Length: 126
Image (tube, helix red, strand yellow):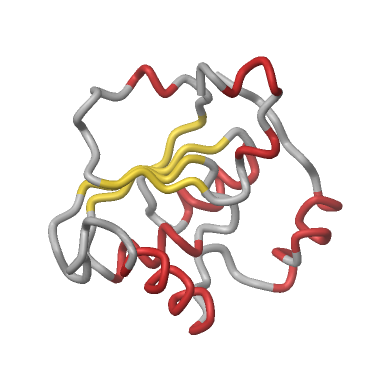
C-alpha cells in the first residue's frame, strides 16, 4: 500500500485548497459529458455503470459518477486525498496495484492527469 502525501503545496498548486473535496463545477461536468459523449458508452447518464477512476485527485469525477448513479471505485496514492474521499463516503482505495481488480470488472476506467506521473519504465505495465 502506498503512503504518499503530496502536502499542502500540492493542493495549493492544483487549486484544491479553495474547493471542497468532490466539488463538481458546471464546467467540469460539461467536460466530462463531452468526453463521454464520444465513448461507446453512450447513453451513459443514469445508467448502472461500474466505473474505476485511477488517481481521483480532487474527487470531481467521483462526484460526477455519483450524480449519474454509477458504481464507482477510486484509487489514489495521496493519503490525504484518500481521507477526504472517505469522509465524503466515496468508495476508494489507496493502491497502485490494479491487479487487485478482475479483468472485466468495470465498464469504464477513467484516468485524468495521471499518465504523466508514471515513470516511463512503468508505463507499459500500467
